[in-house]
Image (cartoon, rainbow, N blue to C red; front, side, top):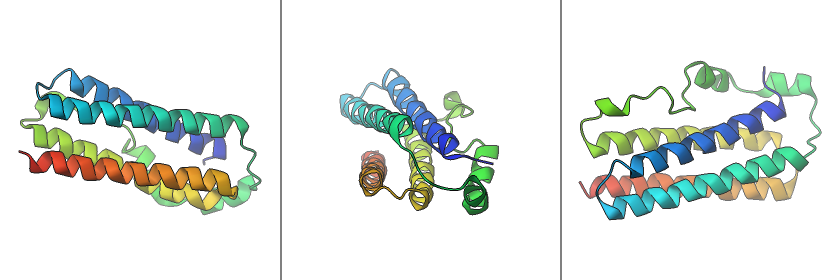
Length: 153
């Protein structure tokens, strides 16, 4: 089962994965407008990763491990079991069109939002909760930008 450290580690890995995939995708695109949006998204993921790392390093959440084990939804275990929170297993070479790539990114961003919204229930510190809410809103903006990118094709 997951501890708070595990949950923060998952968030850090998710942000690192997202940043790496967006940066890698930039090297495969010719459209500068798409590259600039992906760079912006990669930068945001890097900022989110650093925020989660900082929270993990300094945050002392007072939650009983037994309570945590009972509260973590089965969906997280399923997501981790299927590696839904990682882009590592996706074969980008099989994608026929840029919209396939963008749809994959939307799915990753939506999984990220779902995970962070679940994480909110374990955070009691209002400043940390506010920071997490801001990240969720930024992730939602990523989804919106990706949909806008799809609409251009």
